[in-house]
Image 1 (spheres, helix red, strand yellow):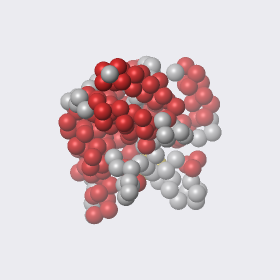
Image 2 (cartoon, rainbow, N blue to C red):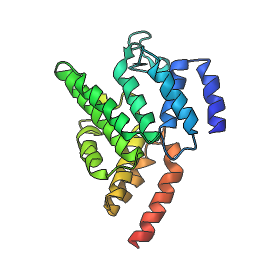
Image 3 (tube, helix red, strand yellow):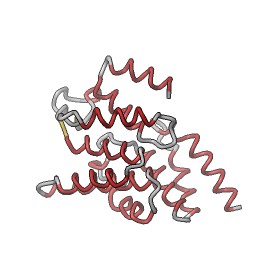
Image 4 (cartoon, helix red, strand yellow):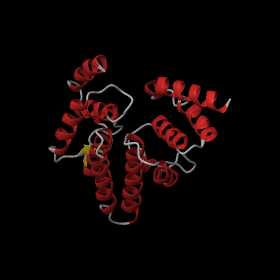
Length: 212
């Protein structure tokens, strides 16, 4: 984490929005050795920022300025992920409820519901809650297609994360064969999967040993 912290600090000089985005999502992963104090600092920073988060990171815009608008629901998404990491599932689920209530109109309603469901899945996994509700939400919200519900992936977490969390919840539910398959799919997302490589290899080894 010390090395990543150094690079993220350098990236912030180029694009502070994207750098904070990546720093927040890294801090939300329970298996990374990010200090709790850093996660708490990021949560306080996000909570104090009324602008929310841009719907698309400014460094990846095809039409500069067109997408760089605040989307407060994304700020709540990040706050929920950090709260779950910090052992505050009730707070994280409250953020999800706020997002679910915020959609107006059919497209906004679908987007709000899907984003809130994804937040609940993340909370169930990161906070170690019983997996049943998380798996139900995963089936309804975190779909990769076809058709893929792209509104669930506004650069919040990559597909590798979605697969990893599903595998973790299946494992927790005792559905070991299914979990093994999902773990195997995580590293197919080569662009973003490196951070999951070590926990995936360990989990697969443990499952294979249990399954004989």
